[in-house]
Amino acid sequence: ETGVTQTPRHLVMGMTNKKSLKCEQHLGHNAMYWYKQSAKKPLELMFVYNFKEQTENNSVPSRFSPECPNSSHLFLHLHTLQPEDSALYLCASSQEGLWGMHEQYFGPGTRLTVT
Amino acid sequence: DAKTTQPTSMDCAEGRAANLPCNHSTISGNEYVYWYRQIHSQGPQYIIHGLKNNETNEMASLIITEDRKSSTLILPHATLRDTAVYYCIVRIRGVASYDKVIFGPGTSLSVIP
Image 1: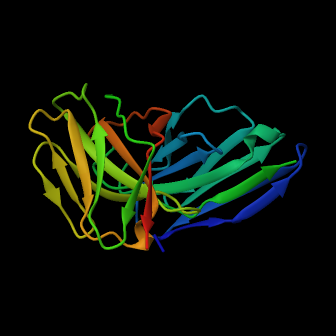
Image 2: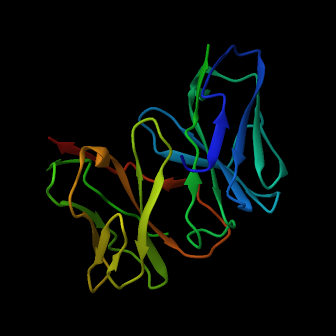
């Protein structure tokens, strides 16, 4: 138990569906992250929020839309996804969004399957 | 940021020390070495980091060579629960910008009973 929770843990959706992934951290951190982990590919950073402001968007397609209403909650809104978007989506948090100053704590991930 | 190379996989007998190497021959003077691990079906977990001195915490020890071109993560008494992918990352500490790929392929460590 890392203090970072993610829901749902598993999600199957069609290409025309709209769904959202939720992440919540109970650690009092100010930075939150979305990562994507595909089969046989390195973990990729998608978005970074520092003090609720998006500071990084690593060329992520617009069918992925993040939302950070406060420092404890992070959402990833999904729409018109492709089968290649099937992956494990991991959320993480850290005390602030400066790399390495504080360790990142990861949630268990949401296993997404796009059919 | 400096690139790292790690063996793809390693085995270690339970109860023995696991020594995981990492090469980072192009490391610059202000880059730190970080280690994370990812147990199957879980998110990565921070282990340890260092600049040039050897470091130890309750999980592991980090040995960095004098020229800083390589390092070794040591798990002193490996258990089955240490079976995971171990990531060696070299980055400048305290920067606000991030690369898309921070965690490379890593080393898959299997602890054998």
